Amino acid sequence: MIRYDPLWKTMKEKKISQYDLYTHHDISRATLHRFRKNKFVDLYTIDRLCGILDCTIPDIVEYYKEDDER
Image (tube, rainbow, N blue to C red; front, side):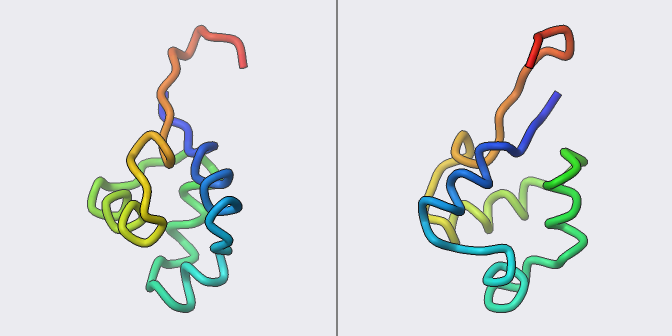
């Protein structure tokens, strides 16, 4: 399963808010909702976020097996 928990930490470190993303970088509120709910987000969007946040994919996405405890 894919989780986007690292995204929120990276955004905090880079001092970029959700408001900044949808206002200044054209990341839609619906896309941010998908990140919050760990729903499918295409690689194009993840690539754009990597550019905006000046980070790599592991700074946005993490994978874990569904039987792992978290």
